[in-house]
Image (cartoon, rainbow, N blue to C red; front, side, top):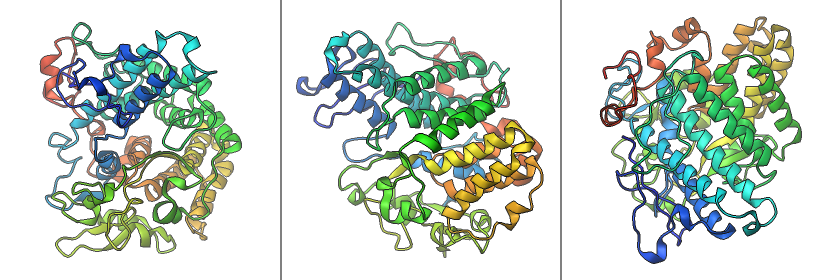
Length: 473
């Protein structure tokens, strides 16, 4: 059973979750905001900030996007535990430490649903201008983000005909509407796309980098369309990519390193960032310590595979992969903490969407739309590589087939987005299965593409349906 509680702390303007029942908990009266307490624009804004807090996996001391950073990179083989030897693919995810992703993303779905249902009941006159639909657009974007995570982690997203989708929830959970069955993959995609279409149509054109807008909704829709890959999806992704690159306020950084080493969320190409709390870098359990090895019981390291991923002509190899760790065969992962291995306010920032990914997705969609588009896709790919400081494009110039260019695009996803939001993991799995097996030999079956449904959901939700194939119920 999904363990969801929705709180709102007025002092922080946020919502947090703590308990295991699907109902609202009673906080002190001066810090209580329930769904039916949304009565006007100010209270709706407070509640929406709470949804962002769930998105950021926040509490009263920090935001923690560690799971988003490491999950995909561990699965792809580029980040590893500093202690132990768990291999997510070999273990078939049965021993994964990421089962909490089910609960975390359904908490986000539920928080978004609380705002959506609350705002919809408030008269339009209680809002200024188009703020009401903008709030709904942001909430539906966040719900779409969570549902897409759930689908790609726990559903057969790669098979549009599969019955193994996710539980689709469009109402705030209470004791009378829990225990819904899982939906099909097609219905799951349709639900996610509907939310994103609303967010694109009604989202703000500009916003602070910690809030979603129409452009981030377009970028997320590109991720979704590339994964679904059905009908006009690739052509539609091309249209979205051209719109973002041609009309959005975001601009590529001339040097990718500056994003992580100096600018952070102030970078012109960051579309949506997760902002740390004040002084978060000084907290004993901050995110950076798991890369910097300060007070960490579960440090994460760069693997030999990540070091080998960067050719000698790629400057990123020197500022993403650090020196060897003496205790094992891995390396320090310094993309965030830098060679000094010291947590800072900058190293605590996380990145959900960057313009560089849009360029790569546009290139991928262009290639998948037809082999005659290889030349245009190469230009996009070399643009991003150039921003990383690469000047030798021989490997790209020598590509003559669409399949070969898709592999080169995957390499760039991995080199540029390792440790961010499972971007390289999905890019790998979008390749033909035989190519996936070649690039990641520990993957021998598509069962390994997704996680098992948590045992608690199977046991407590009598209507859920079947466990994912390859896993015991």
